Image (cartoon, rainbow, N blue to C red; front, top):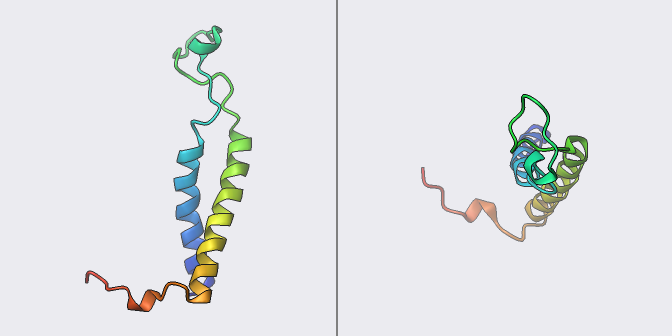
Length: 85
C-alpha cells in the first residue's frame, strides 16, 4: 500500500484513539470543589490536553505499526477476504 494510504489510516486511528483517551484522568470542577465563574460545573478542571495528544500519538503509532507488520508479513491474507461489493 502507498504511504498516503498508511497516513490516512494513521489519521483515522489517531482520532479514534484521541476520543478514547480524552476521559482519562479528568476531574470536573464539581468534583474538585472549585468553580470558575461563568463555566459549567461539569467542565474539566485540568484537561491535560498536551499529555493526551502525546499519548494518543504514541498509541496510534503502535497500532498502525502492528497493522503494517501484519499487512507486510502476510499473516492475514487480505486479498482472500470477501468484499461486500
